[in-house]
Image 1 (cartoon, rainbow, N blue to C red):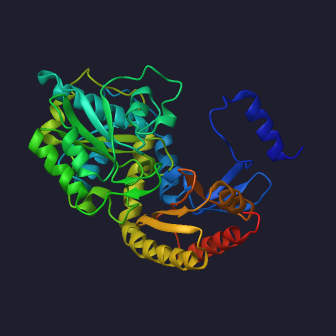
Image 2 (cartoon, rainbow, N blue to C red):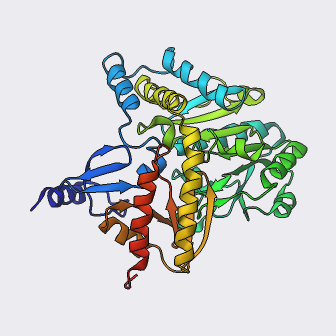
Length: 396
């Protein structure tokens, strides 16, 4: 039995089997590469489901974690935490005037947004939140209900009431759905898990107008699109709108678990003391990591790299599509791209793994390509070469 087999055997014996796992036991990561227990090297083009936005073990992040771990690991949130305040200030400076609540995940951030929306509408008896079909907002009972995909609802009924699902990019459907019960519209500006579908031209602005005209909160889920992924700090900036609530997680912590709910100043009072909490939210160590992420983004030109490499990656993928008709469409923004195939995507993903590259398939036939935001031209060339080989295999 080799080391990988030992790790898999122990894991499968004692860990709850809630994931479908690849037979790889990762033991080390650096930048856009990971190594398994047998010493094999993989190019990671979907690092941590977008969590490792600066690649694995970015030096600034790991140094900040080490330093803070030697000072203070945790204090409860009824004491002041200098790093949480500093991080909140930077998030606000990069987004819009308001306040920040810290949790541990995107699901927690979205739970906070849903709770605030409910309190906002409570005086008039409004509670219904309009979300989009093919959306994804988390795995808690409430956020999975907000998710507009029935496959994630199965087996968990009865689901909490108060959500309606509308077709994405259909502004007429949204107008027709608003009622006296509606309190908010919740959406991703690029649907990730739903197949990498971006909001169309004018759609975000139209949603903003409907919300303003009906006293609704506009909630934008930036868990996957935030922190430079689309070529702006946050995707809403590329669409020319400002949400009332924004949720963040994934790349915010550079590999550490953190979620954030960002609330426009005028709505901050709807979650007063005692209405919402998270025991580990905003701990000194994760805040130190997130501060290092912002530092790296500023000092290392990450946004500029996303714009440049995003254009280069799309160009190389379009060249690939010209040679492989099974690629129906390439869509997305920045370094968040999807390749829709005319067939199941899993065999391609499996073959890429055999060839030494990690990529994701979502919506059954969409290859989701989300490399680290500091990816290089050479690494993109290597990834496209592997995709070319995988797509060219006769058995695929």
